[in-house]
Image (tube, rainbow, N blue to C red; front, side, top):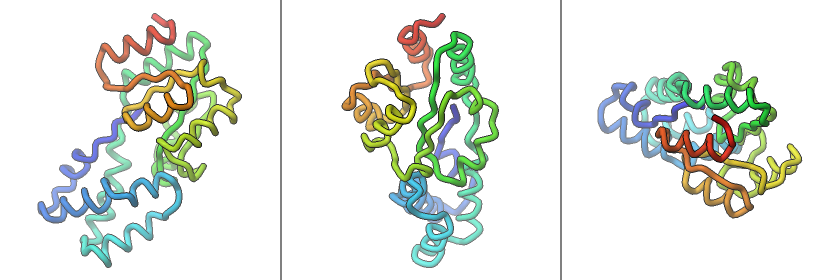
Amino acid sequence: MVNWDPEGILSALNCPPGETALLRDELLMHEDWQRLDQGTVEEALVTRRLIEDIGVAPENVARCFELSRELLINIDKSIELLQTVKAQRQRAYCLSNMSHSTYAHLRHRSFFSLFDGIVISAQERLIKPDPAIFDLVLQRFELQADEVLFIDDSAANIESAMAVGIDCVHFKRTENCYDTIRRKLGIG
């Protein structure tokens, strides 16, 4: 539903190359980012590590976190597809790897009201591709794996969902991908 673009975040920072590389390697592509999404570490602790242990300028850390939320731009075509799904009276659920602060920033966007249920990784302290988060969704919403279509841009997440018996579409933001989703959902 939103565009996650780490390189766009780093470009928008306008930091010196060395600082940009540190923010890429020690924040956006670091295991701490996954831990933020899993809700097992707080942003303040990650910030302190970056400043005190790695030597990143405090203003650049703060700006990187800020941009990581600001640059989550809606994917209009995906939202339109979700609206079509709901107009066809089909159920739709959100399963997203997202930190507490990111969800707080996004949760007021109108597309969230279209979902019949929402599971945010940080709130559950589970993260895709852990099969347990797929089991949680199936149980919580009383869904059968073979009746679910999971759409995600991560190959690892797709593989994990398929392992628990869920049909999947690896999301690529192409017209062919949208057509495949429509076909699998039986919508025009």
